[in-house]
Amino acid sequence: MKLRLYFATAMRTLAAAILSLCILVSPAWAQTPDTILVNGKILTVDDRFSIREALAIHNGKILALGSTAEIQKTAGPRTRKIDLEGRTVIPGLIDSHLHAIRAGLTFSTEVNWVGVPSLSEALNRIRQTAASMKPGTWVIVGGGWNMNQFREKRRPTQAELENAAPNNPVYVQLGYAWVVMSRSGFKVLNITGDADLPAGARLEKDAGGNLTGAITGNQPAIVALFDKLPRPNFEQEVDGTKKFFRELNRLALTGVGDPGGNNLPPSEYLAVFKVWQQHQMTLRVTYSLNGQTAGSEIEELQNLTRMLPAGFGDGMLRFNGLGERVTWAMNNNDRPSDADKANYYQIAKWAAERGMALTMHWNNNASVDHLLTLFEGLNKEVPITGLRWSIAHLNDASPQSLARMKALGMGWTVQDMLYFADDPARSMPPVVTAKKLGVPVGAGTDAHRIASYNPFTSLQWLLDGKMVSGVALRRVEELSSREDALRFYTAGSAWFSRDEDTRGSLEAGKLADLAVLSKDYMTVPIDQIGTIESLLTMVGGKIVFASGNYRRFEE
Ligand SMILES: [Zn+2]
Image 1 (tube, protein in one colour):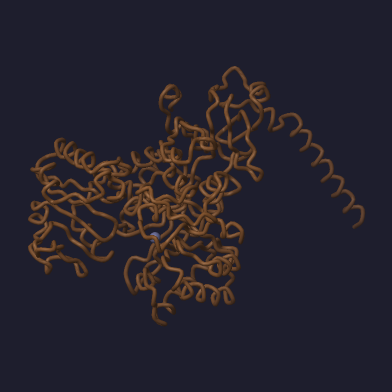
Image 2 (tube, helix red, strand yellow):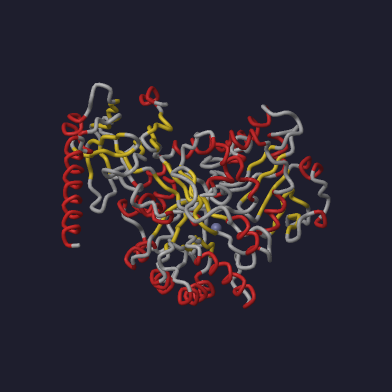
């Protein structure tokens, strides 16, 4: 017995010796990089926020970082060398809450007003699009804009839409509360009075009682109105998805957390699945599922996930649990009934038992106790502290709510919705307090209906708290440092899909997801951060976007 044990130990020692010999023969550091980036200012966003000059990539991962001289030594004859010429490199940005799957569906067929500085230019975009379309085809602006971004500080009128597109019905949506359409649009949809509108919507009238051509309503009403519009065909949806992901790459994004959303039933995921099957994903997408049918969410979610265990998928497209709308009854409901909560609890418990992540849309701190009490109760029955659950939005989170989230192991996804607001009663989400309390924070936008998808708009706003109108509704003590804001947008967001060990910072062994910036994020005046773009974006070592001098590298 003893002899046998000795023999086994000896064999193990021998095996270990052989193994270490093999490692010595071909150590990881001796691999020849396929690409090196040199002469740069690489913000690694590692624990100490180290800055390096150069970086080597092999097989989609970062092999080493160091000085230009050190990294140049590792290059072989076939290594591709990219001279950064002093430019700043950041880990690829990750928006922890961007409705990218939905935005992609219509990106090649809708008119984009994101970041357009004037109403006249916005109307020009309608004019140009209409000119290239068949008469009678809908011209649609689905969101992502706000009148405060326009020099004119106002919405378009019906007459202006008709002037820009005389031969096409036009639909322009602002957030989830207001839509204006051309008269031909009303005609095509057979809307002549309030009775023809979805419940909760009304025709807007001016002070003199005249119809303005606009429709106002609550969120479900506007969602239902949008659903009356013709959808793009499948090819357009696939094309739009690819183009939208590339548009995000242009803005240094390499990943998003997709929280489902309105107007996005399960059938609408086919376009992103197609892009994934074609191996043409240029953005890492982790997605969560929403409850779709009021009252039968649990059966529905159980059916949808029977063959979709937590974490199913790959590095480009992965299932990441439930939310942001888990049940309709708890969605935007500040006063849920006991029955609403019992129903929700049943789903949350089922998700917890399966180790699923869950992200929950909640707007107001005043009512978030309903949700937190429910989660605290559940945590006693089925622990959720290791499941990376989160709350999205909650812009006025109190330190007490954040402390309760921390105790539950929950994270917080923060968006720049307030960038479009002009409400002095509200202020910056308290991200500095959250950081102090140790609550994981992921940054993002909530694009594209509510907000612009531009991460640099959101980063600038995290630093200065200025609304699009230029008004600073500052709570100075909650303004982020440049380092923290970048960390929220990278490693911070990676946490929500358990990816912080593989991406979100530039360290040896991690994925080569990165962006070379047009301006130095660390030193450019804060009010110019919003104008930064990527010159070269890589996902897993592959160049997915390049412009200017770097275009020759594009694969
Ligand atoms: Zn939401």
